[in-house]
Amino acid sequence: MSRHIWALLVGALLLVAPWVLPPFYVGLLTFTGLSAMVVAGLVLLLQAGQVSLGHGAFMGLGAYVSAVLCLRYDVSPWLAMPAGVLLTALAAAVIGRVTLRLRGHYLPLATLAWGIGLFGVFLAWGELTGGASGLDKIPAISLFGFELRDERLYACIVWAVALSIVVAFRRLQVSRIGRAVAAVRTHETMATSFGIDVAALKSRVFILSAIVAAIAGVLYVHHIRFISPTPFNLGASFKFLIMAVLGGPAHSAGAIVGAFVIQGIEWGAQDLFANRLGVSGNYEIIVFGAILVLVLVRWPGGLWPAHLLPTVLPPTTGGTPLPQRGHDADAGGVLLEVEDVAVSFGGLQALRGVSFTLGAGEMVGLIGPNGAGKTTVFNVITGLQRPTAGAVRFRGRPLARHTDRIVGDGLARTFQHVQLVPTLSVLENVAIGAHARTRCGIASGLFGGNGAEERAIFTAAHEAIQRVGLADVAYAAAGSLPLGRQRIVEIARALLADPVVLLLDEPAAGLRFSEKLELVKLLRRLRREGMTILLVEHDMELVMSVVDRLVVFNRGEVIARGTPADVQRDPLVIDAYLGGVA
Image (cartoon, rainbow, N blue to C red; front, side):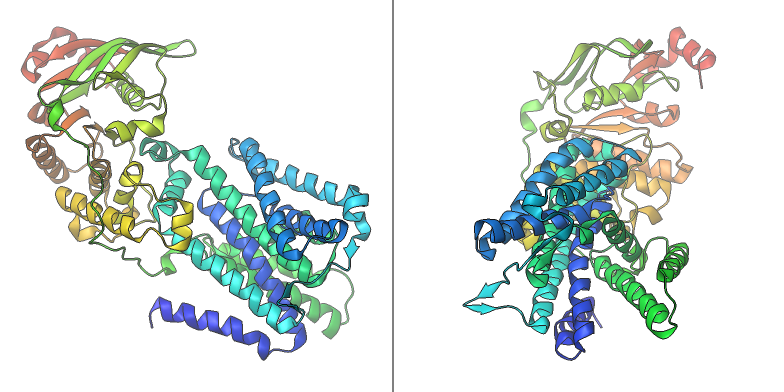
């Protein structure tokens, strides 16, 4: 049975269940659906490598704004609810601008702080929020004069919204933005190098996750018709995060799985101890914790881990071809000029007065001992490292200041240490290279307005994969390939950026002899096609066989330039390799 049929069956079951379950379980189903909405936003955050311990407060903010507008200012719920969502989005934008710059354990601690802060506002601002006593008599949602008070109907509405969010987030996950999110989670440097604005993307994902939490909040408050700070406390935020982790960030449907499991354990344990065993006290918390630990030990990727997902086969043909830059005007000219570049890290001088040029159609090798400054030069050229002095000009113009614009200008690179998204297929990894050539954003990804662009991306990705000889593994997980083929995937990804200059950082590192032979064939083929290449490599036999010129580094300085034959005879080069760091 296909995954689409399963999804339809599960959706139908959730929409039919309220009409056949007893009232108690209908209420439980409604709260599970509201939780699933908040958790879907947290799953999206986890996919971006972020953690929030304050999303219960975002749910509360949306709920309080809607309730206060209705009660204090006599605003219709149909206007108050979007106002609550909008104000929550604005709050998330402000909070995200500050907290998302943090790394490591500082990020969850910061989200914990603002979660506590918002809860404090709900509690302390009594004249507006009702304080600990809360607010009651909040108006129900009306539709054509009919108040939506029927528990079963409301459960259906909640689950229709929750399922729509999950489906939309799954669409987003397999879109251009979803691939960018995966790239940011695994390798921010790589993401930036291919035109992804990491800070902006993190902020938008954070805001989107807060929006769905606020949607859950407004639906909650107009259903219960009472609000107090307690449901939005720190414990609620922790519970939502546990649901997200337990369900698994591999798929947006993990939000539904996590919500059902946690709500089921919580209510089941309460029923067991209080009603059946007659035991007083919060013993269900102990059971809850023990089950959670056991599940996470057994399934660390969540109950819906990546390896259980069906293979997604993206569209392969059709769509308007991706825009291509012209290369004819570059023929015979100098493309790249590095002039007197210096880089210092505190008291350490990594580069001193480095100068060289790269002409159109050339393959130039940068060689030298480890630590000589070769990768630092690459980082300067691609904007990852600002030079302390000197200049880099590309096509006669100063290099763009913003790293994420440089790939759009025509510079694409691979990395010394492979930077792929291991859980994505080879095809999807290569598709990341087209990010700067495409435009569909979050809205298109959510609502399916990106079909033509996706077809164009994957058509071009297939062509790039065939160009480098990897068509047989297009749908394999990139992390399952041997190192040699992973490096070729990186080259294919760089080619999809339609580069004027291709920068290869130690592409033969770790390769077996047979894989090096395949790499040499590929480099020669690209050279015949007119690709301009800047190559950093330690394998001297490989370098000497493919490049036109060499630039030799030692201790941050250029010590020699020339043809491979000239450089091999240079005494300074011989001394650097024999007496320097190997």
